[in-house]
Amino acid sequence: MAKKSIDRAALIAAIRELKELSNEQKSDILQLISEQKKYGIVWEDSPEEVEENLRNNVPVLVEDKDKAIISNADAPNHILIEGDNLEALTALSYTHEGKIDVIYIDPPYNTGNKDFVYNDSFVDSEDGYRHSKWLSFMNRRLRIARKLLSENGILLVSIDYYSFAQLKLLCDDIFEHSSNPDQWNFMECLIFNKQHSQQQGMFKRYHEYVYVYANNRKNVSNVLSEESGIIEAGAIKKISKKNPSSDFHFPAGMKFEAPDGTTITGTYGDSEKMIIKEGVLCAENGKTKYPVVIEAGWTQKKQMESWILGEDTIDTKGQKILEFFFNSKGKLKCRKERGIVTPPSFLPEFGMGSEQTAHLESIMGKSGCFTNPKPVDMIKLFSGWFCPKNGIILDFFAGSGTTMEATMQLNAEDGGHRQCILCTNNENNICEEVTYERNKRVINGYTTPKGVEVEGLHANSLRYYKIKDVPRDSSTTGLKKLMSASTDLLCIKNDLYEELSVFGNIKLRKNIARYFDDGKQKMLIIYKVDAIESIVEEIKKMPADTFIKVYVFSTNNYAMDADFEEVSDKVFLCALPAAIYNAYRKVLPRKNNVITEEEEE
Image: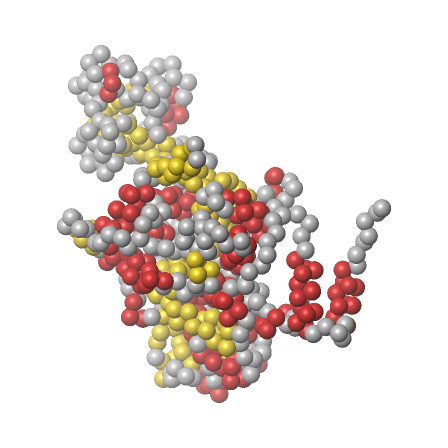
């Protein structure tokens, strides 16, 4: 028998007309219809307390200025948000929709071993709804996360075998898995070698995984940044009679010899990098030099000659490609510094988990604050692959704050201006005492437990925010409360924090209007429309090339355009809090579980 064709629109219309059902019952039935899947993973949706809170409140961000670490005006403003990451992501849906270049997260793996908290309780392995709770939890956050990604944006998620399959199917659904492999937004499953094992039955498991998804695969082909990978030198060749084990070739056909004819001994660590200058392999301090010999008959002779023509190892376009150095074991290596490369699915070794813990403890000056954080070098590698130098990186399972340290380190190495946003709750004071404190010390500098002074990465600013809930109230009074609580959101959205107390000849009162100007951008926030007339008069006096972003209180989407008509060429108008509600409506749960015509659209 042929399958019956269902007129979905007619069915929805009929349900709406039923008088026997309450609005809530109608809403539930329509939700079931809209969520019906033809293929993919299904689960029993588990409500979260924070989601229920969002039915009646909207989150804003309020800065804890006592925790601010402010560097020079050109330093990137990194952001740390304390609170539930679902609320944090909701707030970011207004400030950063379509702006994030890289999202890296290390979520709870749902092992059943007290690693996953749901509604303030640990989910254990005996919980029959364990996987449904985890999928509900991840689904809500990942759907908002995708909205935050730029057109070139990349999501990377660490996971192990406990939820490996569930996460893949969930992400395939969110990132619109296609039947055509050439159109898959799924990019790769990377293998992370932890360098220590867990006994799993008859096997010892040494690895975890990192899923890589693109917001739009078509935009990723050229998104890799220039600093993009590490390549080991070729095998040692035994050609020297005096000391055959320490004569190096890279690549085959190229050798390095000391000026007196003796062979190279590997005595240099990573800190003493070797580069080619004027055809000579030498340490950066210039004290140690080895001539580069290109053997006759080598088929890539011309290519190698192009690398050694100038002050550095270069290609024919004048870009530095390779940097040579000896590792601590005396093996010659080279690092690929610039040029697009194809990243391997097997990640390099980043050291034991105990080494990552030791690194964190060296910063914090104490043990036990956080165990087995992810490697700084791994997240730095991901950011180097996918985030442009002026890009934005988000981690909404921030943990100890590794992602921010990795961002600051990468900026210091390549002159970048990347911004990092971290979100974490403050369970057991982790946000204040670990995440914040760690990155505060990385910026300011610190002394290790062994008494070693570590210079800070001073060219960074860090701002600390807490989530504040404002009632979802459409009355004029409610809208004014949301407007007055949203100033910090606007500062984050525009990356503009320098406030002035005057605008032209007007001395401002903060309950009437506020003005921000850092010499590059200008922003006015007008809370009371009575102030518009005098503000417009001041704008008239400003130079013709003046441009000010003006946020005006309004009970609807009208931003008082007529009042600014005489200066329309100098301003960009935006009505608040309507702009915030418009952004939040895409991600907020329905209020009181009732579908309104506005929300249905």
